[in-house]
Length: 550
Image (cartoon, rainbow, N blue to C red; front, side):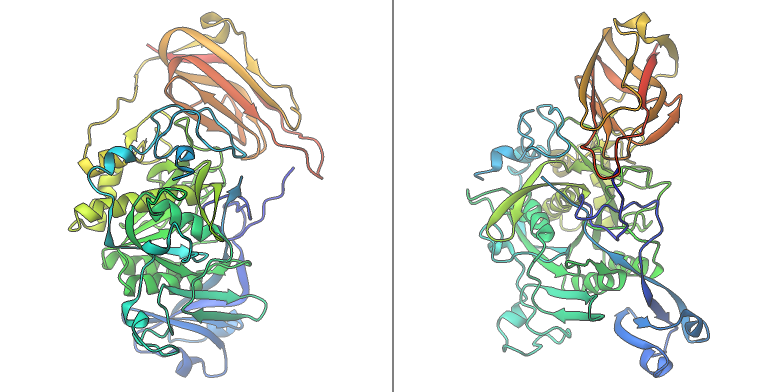
């Protein structure tokens, strides 16, 4: 079946598909070095290491160097050094388009076609129409998009693009604001040219990939009846480009984050992730936390538990980080979405229409799409309560989420983003069934079905639906004799009238689902098309038993 390529990935699917369970992709012979206080990389290394870049966080200097790690170990002036990881976006491609923006108003039938097509449930949305009666944003709120850049000339975005007034009113070709970047009127670029091995630094963050522009539209596409409507009608979007056709690096990301901090961002959107743990990148995020900046990060698209397979930067345990999973229009986690105890909340991330370079629009899926919905929601909140700290904002986002069995134990808040509740500080909890006593039954004892199963090994390009009806609405857990499908690409979605959940991968024998509530259940199984490797060798699944709360 499909081969997974490890890159440091943005939270969408697959320009590349990052598997956080594999070995992180480090740039050969390249390291990030944190100098001890008072030491300069140029004076310390002389000609013994090639210095590719430097940045200063507070009173400490970090350097991007090339050379031999055994040589680096000999320098006593170094606090630590670590690999410089390669990063790349995670995305699945699939106003005039406002009716297809189910995250704004979910009719149950308006999720655009995507690889992962699910049944919609009316009302499973952000309640943005009601929220906009309170505020549609404020131009003073700066949200930095650390990504592939942004098409700042797009008609649905251009009036909401941040302007560096010192550079805009300054002299062409001159660094008017003294930040080291010339003519950075709308943002900056810190991008590794992997062919030449250099960092490209300039003041033009134009998007040549599409991902950052799509993210920007989710946050702040203008409500002008042209195409799509952003979460905020008024906002200042600051593009900071660090990802190109070959991705970027951890050090590039640090430079981008520092630029956003110093240029006045209140929120930094990070629809990317992957690679290994980086103390240097964590330091940059802590530097943002010290400035009270909210750092919103995609949970990743591996369909795995981040508590087991770490995903960065969303897994950094810093107080200003909000890690975001993706849910679909049927009120369940998208099959590709990562989850776990280090993920804080779910937001719409499957079949999302937004802006794209060249005055166009496109539907994409991934935690990259869910993340800017949270960033935009935070922007709306700060536009009416600017005094809130990053910690208070994070707490508010989680406490006001709509609780559901679909997210119970899958994200820390047990819920999905709802912007009307967020603005009103509505912390009344949706009831989640939780029973102390469970009784096991044969499936045949409580329904007309003796079992629900797929042939083993199941075939590629399979799409089947099974239906099961109980005699009354109940809290249930389905028990599988075994469950084994190709991770992410082949999946089973279980839906009731109000809840939904998706399973994929090798979950072993006697696996049981999370708690679901309903009377009528549907089981949608989907396997993808065959590829060069051959037929699917996975066993599939069989359900013969069910637990019902008493």
